[in-house]
Image 1 (cartoon, rainbow, N blue to C red):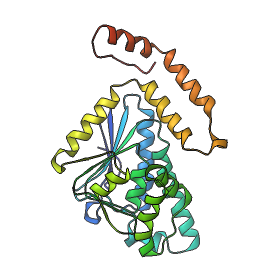
Image 2 (image 1 turned 45 degrees about the vertical axis):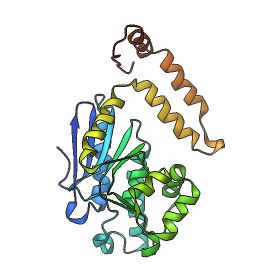
Image 3 (image 1 turned 90 degrees about the vertical axis):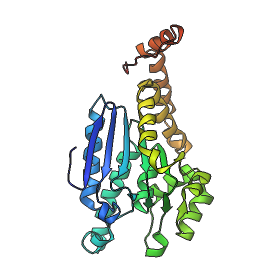
Image 4 (image 1 turned 180 degrees about the horizontal axis):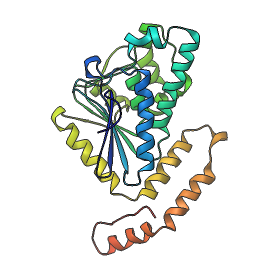
Length: 263
């Protein structure tokens, strides 16, 4: 494990883990934790052996419960401090959202406020049956910026996004699944195994194909005028020119599991 005592990381084979480690506060996040998360992702980005990143919270009771309100007086008390805080948090969110490798939010317990924001920055969200979701901004008088709202709307649509914010109430895992906020709901005791198996499955598939799909989906959710279709076409072309494409065809004909190299 590495990083600070409040942010941990580990590597298991081709899977990297980002762990928010503040269980006494339900993994509430401070500024230094947001900054540490970016450093962990930078390391996973540079490590060619890491194919998938799993994001989770320690302690068994929460994924991430949002910002650490106990530090608001110090970190968000004035206009300049608020601007700095928001910039650092958005940099961390963007690091997850724009991360070039697949990301999975492994959610147990509370996924509240900034935790919801973090989860929506990941590609997939898998939670336990007892998980709870909420954005209580309307109960705190907080504004919520365009980037975070767009990420949520891209996942659940405008009507559910407004319901989440207007009511500021807690939603169950079943609610989250119905809204499309999570991909899968599993029994509590099966979460780690399920997510690990999913991550290993993804990491064993062709990296160039996954890279092309992730990049193209990112273009799809942009406004028409901002889409880079040329880049998407180039990534698809790279798949067909790769040795992995040849390996995939051979493995299929030989009825064996392919061994991809990302080249």
